[in-house]
Amino acid sequence: MVDKARSNPFTIFIRKIGYSVGLEHTVERMRDFASLYANRETIGYADINRMLHDPKPAGWGLDKNNEHVLDVMRSLDVISVRNGDVGVLEAGDALGILRKRQDEQAFDASLQFIFAESLLRADGDIFLNALTACFDPSEFRDRIQRLIEFKWAKLESMFQSSQHRGAIYQAINIEVQENNRGSRGRAGGLTAHREDSPFAQRGNLLAATARPEPRVSDAYLKKALPRRKAWAVALNLSNPDGTMTPLGEQFVQHLVNAGFGGPSCMAMWPLAYETKTPTFAGLQFPEATTILDSWSYFSLIRRALGGVTGERPLDEQVQTEGVSQLRSILKAYRSLNLSKSIVRTELPARVAYLVMLASTDRQALAFPVPDIVELEQKRPSPRLMARRSRLAEFALSD
Image (cartoon, rainbow, N blue to C red):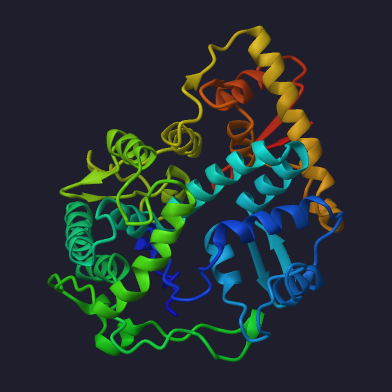
């Protein structure tokens, strides 16, 4: 199992899950987590442990040494478990709120949206190129190699130093994994440390002065494609034979139109808040790099899945209804995870965005949440207060 080198700032330019295990039954497990979270006043290590290890159907029936699914859940922004402490992440909070507020049919549609947007933020470069290659190994390899070279070229135009370029080549690449045994059988459970990256096994790319050759091994293809195909089928983006469904074709076309296409490949880019670091401060990204804010990204994924068709024109009625819905979401957010209520007084912007978009009827117009929040702050007595944040964008309180 391979994880990203988090000290490398350029990891935000590649959307990939580096895990080879723990990827099974992802949608079903997100649904189970949402139900657990929504129906308990608090959620702790014991709850997660029972969900993982209790026999089916009460739990997932996993072996005590098999907790790799938590790595995947963290990558999908659902939950983080470290040293026995459970932290619910933004997608996890959105799922919990929606499960409390929606019936089964509505929640299933919301789950599809939350899973799709989380999957693309975690693994979009790999998943989308597998999808558009119809899961053909040769075509997928070609697309990934074109993706890597495309992203290298765009970032090379911004960074000339050998140190920066070495970091680019290291971050935006696919591990060779010729003999990677994965993480099955390793001891350590929830607090285990990951093994060193295989980059150490094939030379330090940080010292590179010239481009290495992009490589996608047969071992990687064998591990990467089957699970992503199952994800695509679960999202109704792909047929079991690997061909795209009409929804899959529509989904990809929306993303291409939004700027996530490259030369015969798909290419995801970071969200605006992810670029708010010293390395990228004040830089003008090339035109071909589409850097969206979170609201624009979430709205794009909702539209691509056949959801909302646009935004409602902002008037006093829309403003009042939108504020009312946001206050209701804030109340639901505070009702979750009461053991941590002292630090859960403010609703993070991205949780509010996800819940508002998921709560909008399909083929309907969404509330323009950023505009509603901004306008509300100009009132003499705002019904919602927004605290600006560099990374969280804003947090809402009343």
